[in-house]
Image (cartoon, rainbow, N blue to C red; front, top):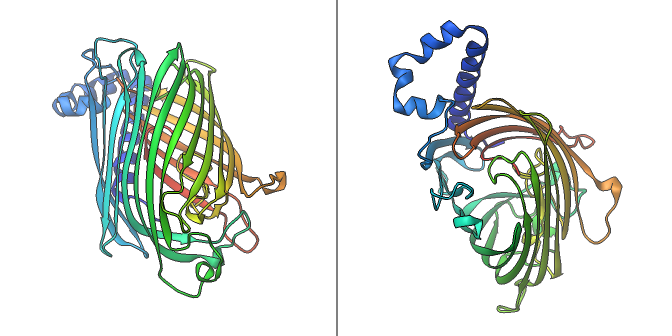
Length: 395
């Protein structure tokens, strides 16, 4: 399991400090006041991360964290992760938070993982832009295709990926958007240990490939906020088509994605979030485009790529309890399946767990998230689990 040691301890420290202050405030007001009135605690830098008051200037929020980890496939991994939250128009009281996120890491085995994403909302939330630029030269474990793969078949590959994605959506009527998108991806694979399941499997697009696709999207979104939603609905349908520009075993065909979310405020501090997703590829599809079950957003607890196929169906529920303006807890449970053509209820896999939240930016309701996800236990294998350290909510 690879994880960021520095990010873990920094986040854990902030969570515990915030929780201690919350307890002190509730149980020992005098102690709380003495702690809060200290010179260090009154400094602007510290107050930015512990104050329970929003910034009345509606200013931008910025956070940079170090990344440090280790795995046998990578050696020592080091880098930075940063997020910048802002309003494109601070005079608009209803405008949603825009964000820029940059993540980059390198390893002592000369591997690289760079990712830049943006999520921009214009005045009146009239237009919404999303973009991603990514370069990845990193290990990828291949177990086979379908929902019946085994840990013993793990085959270590090196995956090289370049991705560019841009999507823009325009509000047509209140809460309803229509949009266009474009995406280019280029994949390369190298088998680090020939003779394994990757080497002997008859995979389409085995050594990689590229494609350019054009998309249409439809969105209904009446959430009260796009960062920490407590009420509202979100429904997005996206269709992409990739023409046959490069021939050979490069992808040409279509893909369909559906994302449904609902949020209910049960009490002032307790929120129930529900999500269901569906992803499907059509045509002669290279294996590397198959939707993967498992991520830090859906089906937490599974290694991405342990189960993959042409179709992916997931659902999850999450209870979020914000015990303090700076501190929150979450419990989640879900199920999902990766399959080819025919869905079978017996193939559904479990996902459940919980986590902690530290809200580093109250104006934009932005959080650092630590989740522990638990998956299935296959015969003769340890139960599948994963730890996630992420910026922002899962959905």
